Image 1 (cartoon, rainbow, N blue to C red):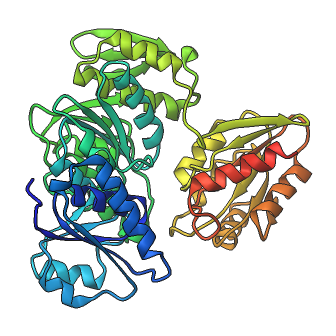
Image 2: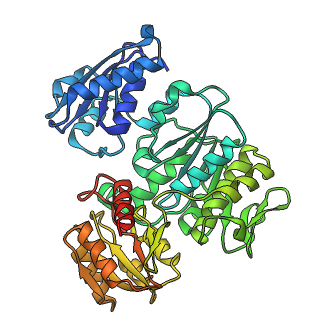
Image 3: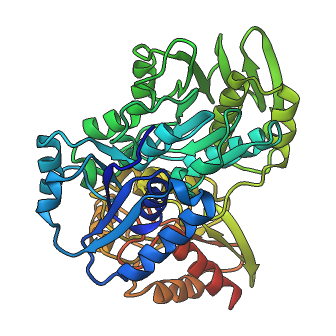
Length: 460
């Protein structure tokens, strides 16, 4: 794509915004990075973009970079050729609507990276399991090919690696609904939607809009592409009838004529004929939800042409991802588990299901307008005490009491919540951080929250 001399607005800073600005700068665009937070350090942001860009592309290809903070300068609208939205910035802001009304193209960071990059994209979305599946598939592909990049919502912006991609590269990408809102021509060679349950309704407003955003991962795929879907998800089973790509299902509950399924304890890959991949007893990741993540990765890799022996050996060695039902330590007979990535009720249900001891649970955080009924019902006698923090604590407590669960403790800080857990947990119990809420308001992200939990455990 020829960006040279184009005036491009990057809306929102942070890791994605700065990476997008750097890619545009490398390709000759005149970049304006805008952020409404006037307290940011504009000089630092610009210097980092310039330094990164100069290290990745020759000077003759460079454009220019400026940084604008605070109130949006609406006079800029008459100069723009393109706007690139950072994932955290809502696309229905009044100023963005004005851009659309002026026919200024509004892209996301993913669309920009795809337009400028090379190689095949294997893209994964879903409410839960994205990071585990992306990490596993990334490892499979790295054991198969040399030029592999694992990017996206997993913490490494797609735009940050574009300058390093080649025609034979493979990009394994974790896609959020925020990122998929702004795709136009993005076309993965293999896509996957793992599951869909309510999440981010504060951003998407309706479940229908959230589902539509997820399904956009496959909207440009064609008959020689593949789309991997969870057969046990009713929304996705229906969606599979409309997809332009070849649909491959995975299932943890039934045998499939074509796809990947769990037969007892054995993962079977059935394309032309059923081929055993491995037994779940051979995996280092636990729980049905992780077996589903593994099956999705198997289906994607096999559809792309990876030999089954490479898939099998990678599966056996994969140890999971940080902050997802991560065993931290056992202290004084109590097992501590970090599931900070359980940022919505459905993900947190999976954390509870993985526990095999009486559990003291830390819940609560930022309110994404979720319903907590199913999460509370999943306690099923496992949760002996619920310690609540954050903006959602009263809402969750009210739900719990309505459903007959009354062993609730309120805490004013994360540290206090941890202290209460240590106080209530007995030898043979587990303490589980699986909040069912985002971390915002108390932490900058779920990683920081999980790291704090692990630090507190190690200090015991």
